[in-house]
Length: 135
Image 1 (cartoon, helix red, strand yellow):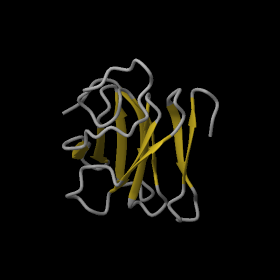
Image 2: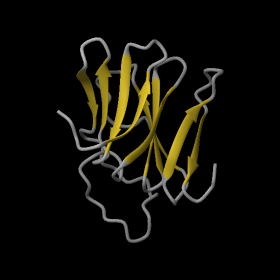
Image 3: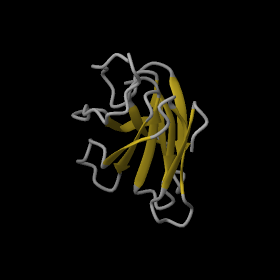
Image 4: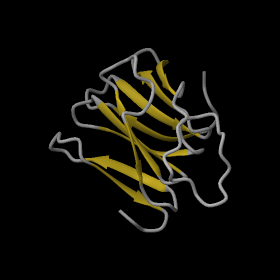
């Protein structure tokens, strides 16, 4: 199942999985070998992080305020970071397949998160960059 336009993609460190962020805020994990979606990070994930833009409409279907604009894997492959138009950054625990809600929600640039990156040292530190020029 696809969810509109794909706005961002990132290959896992081992190259076997691909994460995609879509127009409706949905995140999908794909098996690179088969080209099939193996996990959808959307269900039961709708909690507000308090990052919504003034006047932004709530009640969207995906985990993020549409669209999901940025996505990155931790070097260990166990965490994924994603960022959206409202300025929200979500950290996902991919080591637990039963966990479909974000491990943590952070507020990034209120102008929208346009990029996310993990520290290469494996510490789990994440940075984001946004539409208003903040990091």
